[in-house]
Image (cartoon, rainbow, N blue to C red):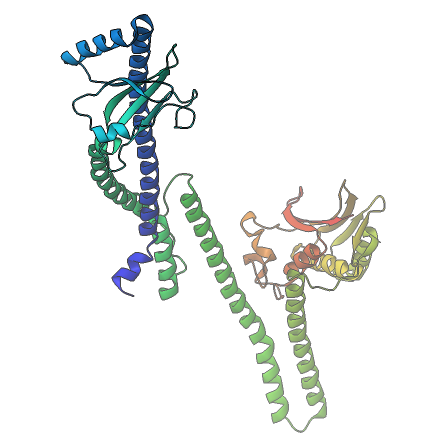
Length: 467
C-alpha cells in the first residue's frame, strides 16, 4: 500500500478534512450574513438620507414653489456639501426644473425611471436603488414625492456600488479564510490524531496477538469515562475473559487426556495379557469383563460430556412436568442409603410439606444424585448429609448440606467447570464432571445452582427451580 493510499484511508486525516470543511461552511455562512447585513445597513442609510432630503425639498416647494426651490438648489450647489440630483415633473412628465450634480452623466439621468404607476413608482415604493447602466460601478438612490399641485419631485444621490465598496472586505475574507482553513485543518489533524490514539493502540494490540499469540497483551487505555476509554476497558475485559477461556480449555484438555489415558492404558494392558495367556478360559473371560468395564467408563465419560455440551447449548432434551421435590430427594436417599451406612454416615430428609416445581424428574434426579454422591464422598465417617426442600415466592429450593470440609471460597466457581479437580478431590476417584453436569441440568431448567458454607462448616449446595 502506497503512502498516498494509507493517508487517504487514515481516519485522522478524514476527520481533519471533515472538520475543515465544516469550519469552511460555517465561516462562509457567517461571512455571507455579515456581508448581507452591512450591505442592507449601507443601503438603508443612503435611502434614509435621500428620503430626508426629498421631504425637506418637498416642504420648501409647498412654501414657495419652483422659484424658492431653485434658489435653494443654487445656494446648495455653491456649498461644499453633498450634491443631490433634483427633478420636478408635471403629471405628463414635462420637466419643471432639474438640478444635476457635476459627477452625474446625462445619459444616466435619462434612464432613471419616471414617476407614475406604470413607470416603476408607486406609493408603496417611494425610495429605491437603481444601477445605471448595469455595468456601472456606482448606484443611485432615488426618492419620489407627490407635490400638492400634482407635480412629482425626484431626489437622487450617488452612492458607491456595493461591488466596489466591499471588494477589500472580500479580499480580506479570502486571505484570512484561506489561512484559517489551513489552520483549522492543522488543528483538526492534531486533535484527530490524539483522539484516535486509543484506536491505534487497539489495532496494534490485536496485530501483536495475531502475530505472536500472546494472549496476555492488553491495550494501554486512556483514563477517564469517555467513549474510547470505555471501549478500551471493555476490550481489555473481553481479552481477559478470552484468556481465561483458553486457559480453562487447556486445563480441560489436559484433564481429559489424563482421564482417558488411564482406562485406555488399562484396557490395552488387559487385552495384551489376554492375548499372551491362551490357556485359561477363565482368565480370558476376566480380561474381557475388565475390558467391558473400562469401555463403559469411557462411554460414560463421553456421554456425560455430550450431555453437558447439549445442556449448555440449550438443546438438552427435557420432559418437564409438575413434580414434588420430596419424591426426588426420597429416591436419591434410598439409592445411596447402603453407601452411607457402609461409611457410617447418616442421610436426613427435611421436607415438612410438598414443594412443587416444573422439571424433568429423571434429569433432576441425576443432578441430585451427583450432589449426594459428592457429599457422601467427602464427608468423614460419623457425619451426616441433609436433603431439604422448601418453597419460596418464585422458586422451589432444594439443598444438599454435608458436614465435610466444605469448599474453599476461591474454588466455588471453578468446581462447576468441566473436569476440574480441586486439591481436596485429587485423591478421590472421579472424572470431575459431576458438578458440571449438575450446573448444566439446572440451568437447562431455567434455574440456578450455588454453593456456600453450611452453619456446621460443611458445603451447602442450593438448587433453585422455577415453580
